[in-house]
Length: 401
Image 1 (cartoon, rainbow, N blue to C red):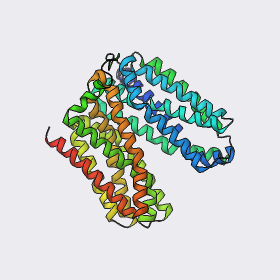
Image 2 (image 1 turned 30 degrees about the vertical axis):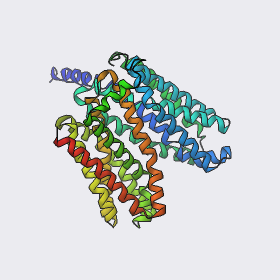
Image 3 (image 1 turned 180 degrees about the horizontal axis):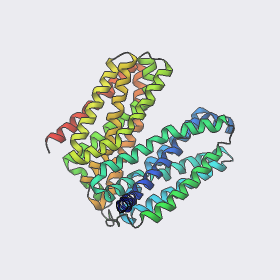
Image 4 (image 1 turned 90 degrees about the vertical axis):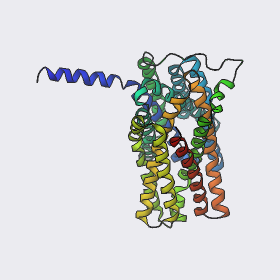
């Protein structure tokens, strides 16, 4: 027994040492999501502190999302040239600077600049992180991406709760962002020191000056890649439209109380815990079959949500939607990293993610418009149709391999 214990401890230490890249990358993603999700609960405080309108506050958050979306392609292309560690570390520093400005923010104009800077800094992370994890954990890409996504989604629970605690305790909200700035710098420094020796060297110069975007767009000439990219864009539309209006649909469209609708909405995010599992299954069975199954589940549950009634039936539909749509994300990203050439992986994925974010940004306005001119059931039926299109595309790819 005495000789086995040190051997087991040594094996455990060796296994844990291989997870440093995942832990630090997921930690930075959690912080990026935390800084984003902490803002909306503070809108009433911002409105009172800076004497601004709801429209101005909405535009501020739009600025964050635009800054985030605008960084998807540049960060990926830059990572192809200078390496993933430099880009992720630089993004952490920019996010820390934005959080520090939020801590100071003597005027609303400074707050606007700070929020946009947070968007730009955090926008440098996800595309590059997918590239990094798919290389470091080549045999477990889906599982690693699932862990990162799950950790990030947990910020959606932690941030609003922490804001509520601070406000209830009459603690200055600015301290939240001071802590965020310190955490971003600390994680960025730790990431730089620990991951630099583990991360792959830049695959090349990426797209050269003469080729420009053509090198990054070359992958889209392949029909299968274009089809998968299109279904990812359509799925992003469905997810965004659903997340934006699910509580209102459950209360106004399905007749549930606001409290019950809120509880079921929380269940949708709790289902994000399946992401490491779905990613691991994709590593074993192949991503296309898993994507088809998860999108099929999501489509069926979305249809059941539109056609069904009663708390139990609607709750089961919401949980099924959470499993299907959350579980889809790491599998989608793992498949992208298996089919995009290494030397243009960051930039090409950045192009796809930019298209996904544009699609996601259009979804709330579309669903809102359809619900205004008709009903929420009609609006959500349109989402069922979009999800069915994505599912059929995934099935076609899976059966024609």
